[in-house]
Each structure stands twice: as C-alpha cells, then as structure tokens.
Image (cartoon, rainbow, N blue to C red):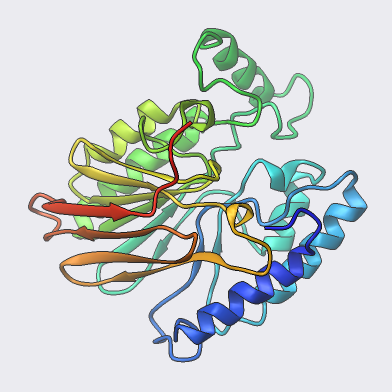
Length: 289
C-alpha cells in the first residue's frame, strides 16, 4: 500500500472488507478472526509515534465483534518493549494456545523471541542464548537481523502442545510471524530455527496447517505432506486497495480465500488419525526473487 497511508485507514478498509464478505456481521459465535502474520505496526522513528500507530490500529481491531489472536512480528518491537506490546495486545504471553471450534486448536508462536531485535537486557539469559545461536549458524542465509526464532523453552512448549493435541484428538493450526519450512518463503526471510520447528510440526499427526507472514510476496510449500502458507503482506497491495484472506475451516478441508493481492488456496484434510493432507492447490503467489 502507499507508504504514507495511515495505518488506521488500512485496517479500517480491512475491517469493512471482512464485513462485506460476511466474516464479521454474520460470523458464528465459535469463529474467530486471527492476525497470524504479525507486524500490525511498522514501527516508526520513535516510541511515541509507534505507540500512536498502535493505538489507532488497535482501535480498529477493537470494533470487531469477535476475538482477534495476534502474532508478534519484528516491526512490532522496533520501538516498543515486549511488555508494552503485550499490554496493548491484551496478551498474557507472546506465544499461546487457543481452542477453536469442534476439535480445532490454534498454536501461536513468537519467532521474535530469539532475535537481535527482541529487546532483551544486555547479559540476560535471552540475549546469551540469542548470541550463541547466531554465532553457531552465522553462515546460514536465513540468519538476518530482521528474522528470529524460538528459544528452547518455547520449542519444547510446541512439542508438548502437539503431544497434548494428539491425546485430545484435536487438529492443530500453527501461526508464526516468520515462515518455518524451507520453500515457503524466500530463504532470506525464514525463521532462524525454522527447520527444527517445521520438523516438529510435520512429525505430529495432529498438525494440519502452518500460517506465517513476514515475507511480503507470500509463498507456499508442501513439506513432509503438510502445507506451510505464507500470506502476502498488505504493503504489496496498491494504494486504496485491499489484501487479506478469509480462512474457513470445514470437517474435510481448509479454504483460504484471498482478496485483492491476498493468497487463495484449498487445503484438503482428513481426520487427525489419518493422513492430514490428501491434496492441495494454490494460486496467486508472487514470483520468487
């Protein structure tokens, strides 16, 4: 979108688009919109301006008549502390699990936790772990300052949540800001420990779909028979236009319907105790660079 267009206008147009597609005005009580891609603010030149943007954007989200589940992005923390951001998002934690409807569960990851922009105090365990990981993998293409990953504690949390979902017979959607699987985005924009996280997800029979953002052109890959979708960024849409997607979850499939420059795909699944993917089609992906 236009570089100077106010964030509140962008989100307002998104909200109206959802309403016009019956995603808001007629949404059932058990359905919830999500902001899986993160970066709900760009992060301007100082904390005050960034806070102004955040208040305007959150005011638009506040007008929705159903819950919104946010994902932390690298731009969110550009001039904000983690504590201030979570307070504004009304979130108790930067990564969490949500039970959706009829045996579906959403796991939201924080892939900014292990990063140089996470805002950890100098000498803290978080900073020590970040620097150690960065130094050990420095030659990897994805080890860019705008990327990040999960610390060991969160990685183990993901394992335990997937194991719990298997016991509960739930099917799982995993949302993160940085794409996880190789091929789902440009390698320069992928999660630092994406290989490990994607393997953990794909190894679980409960896991059905991964959603991410960060890499504005978007992307899609089938990794170990599971779909990893990177949603296009709104910044790639023309000014005064739209870019978003409505995801509908059915018993036998997930449909992601893109609007504007948003992605469109059909992901077909079977019950959790069988093979989760039997077919997938995907359109409207920008050319890879």
